[in-house]
Image (cartoon, rainbow, N blue to C red; front, side, top):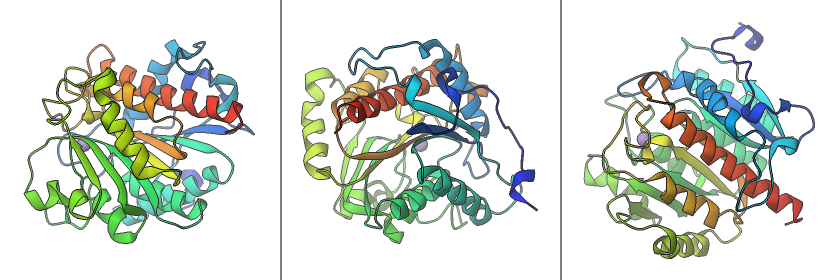
Amino acid sequence: MAMGQFAFANNTNRFLACAPLAGQPFAVAGVPYDGVVTNRPGARFGPQAIRSASLMLCDGIHPVFDVSPLEHLGDALDMRLPNASPLPEVRRHIEAQATALMAKHHCVFLGGDHSVTLSLLRAAKARHGGEPLALLHFDAHCDTWSDHFGEPSGHGTWTYEALQEGLVSPAHTVQVGIRSSGERAAREYVADQGGQIFTARALRGLDGAGLQGAIDAIRARFGQRPAYLTLDIDCLDPAFAPGTGTPEPGGMTSSQVLTLLEGLADLNWIGMDCVEVAPVYDHAELTSNAAATFVWTYLSGQVAKRLRGA
Ligand SMILES: [Mn+2]
């Protein structure tokens, strides 16, 4: 079957109502796949919901970065993906389309379940010199299980797979917001490999200046190594993001995430994804609004950096 025949969940809205993708330096693309979730499906509709929520930001000058990403951004709409093929086949399609987009643009991908990040990291590493990348991973879950309830891969294995494949550097891997149940070997895997974990418990009550220690630690660890940002919306407490497949109480606030994103904007980011937004479980578009704001914040920071010539 030719790739052009896959048409599931293709959207016509564009992020921030930006122009169709042409020669803009920044691109948004949807990855509407949720075939390997543990519990509740629905993240295939995440890209559509995040784009809709973003429309309130379309004329917005960012208050910290003093830019709007709108004129610098195009939307590639959704990847065309097989929906009934095994995960390795789906991942090949995602990687091929991500590779083509990354060749021309600094990309933000809208998931989709978190399994899609492995393909995006494969494309990003190849694009940026082949050295293992730095990885900043916001999530309630460690995603370092070595199997998915007896299957080789799911949406909770991609971090383990990325470290095993050498896509990311263990010493430059940092997780933020982790709190779900799980055996110690998985929960502590990133730290055991030499990375760092800021659990949601360790971040309780910290914001603003209280997060400066975490910002400084991540900055020191990453330096100017090419870095990829993956943000599972379930890093947020369900109070801020109910619309996700596997919510975990006791999570981060939206302002904590924004403090970190704003404070780390000048690192050497090469791409981002925001995953696991499942609008069917959302209320009042809380979750898709949070996701749209995080993506807008990232893009504003990167556009400001580009305009400075940095
Ligand atoms: Mn998660």
